[in-house]
Amino acid sequence: MLPTAMIVDDNMEMRATLKSVVRDYATVVDECTDGSEVIQHYRASHPDFVLMDIAMKKIDSALDQVNSARATLGAVQSRFENAVANIQIGVENLSAS
Image (tube, rainbow, N blue to C red; front, top):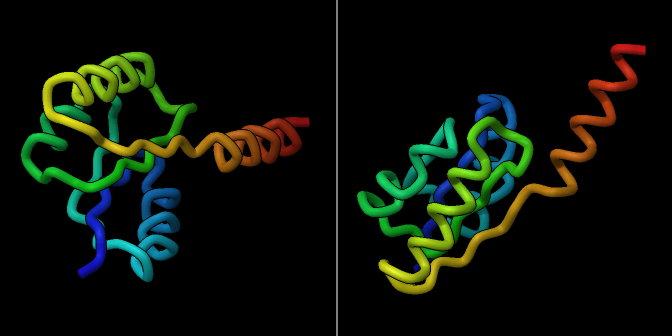
């Protein structure tokens, strides 16, 4: 059985891209569009791991919530889309030039 994943990103296209990449390795059980939703969704879906965009709004809240979840709900693996976010920001900066 595949592990389960939750994808957290405010960009719909990025969520769709991540979902298509992850589906060969995990079952996506939930998606969030805002950092403030993470714990509520985590408690409802109990994913094995979380993929989270570090460049979205309310990320500090989400990071705090993930750390809190580790303490109260047990271990949760989290992977932050650092490289993807940096590439996206770079492309946006080039487009603005």
